Image (tube, rainbow, N blue to C red; front, side):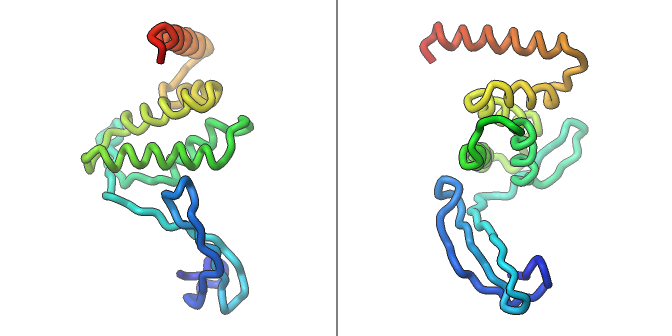
Amino acid sequence: MRCPFCGSDNTSVKDSRAAEDDTAVRRRRVCESCGARFTTFERVQLREIIVVKRDGKRSLFDREKLQRSILIALRKRPVDRDRIDQMVSGIVRKLESGGETEVPSSEVGELVMEALKRVDPVGYVRYASVYRDFKDPSDFAQFIEKAALEDEDDDADGK
């Protein structure tokens, strides 16, 4: 592993442990050349997923981009970082186990919406405002009203 500080290939692992709900290995490393310490994560990747954007462009699925978008939606919200990591891992598992190598971006967005709805209602609305491209306050009001009705239906159904 190359040191991110000096570029040396002379690094060693000082500590390894399970991370992110046992879906990754966290390795604490030290550079033998400059003495810097840094952390790496190792994850199983079942298959490469291609995300098909609305405009038809294709790009490799980026777990970090997914995590950043969720972190933005949950900024200054009382959601533990471990919970966010679990959410991201769950979404990635669903995508990888779906069997498809190409996934529409809308499917990724809907999975994020489902996960956020269960974890934090404010983060859910924040994400929806960008994902659904809200233009003015009435869009927020309509979305929140619809979400409240869905919650009532879920409660009535015993979900």
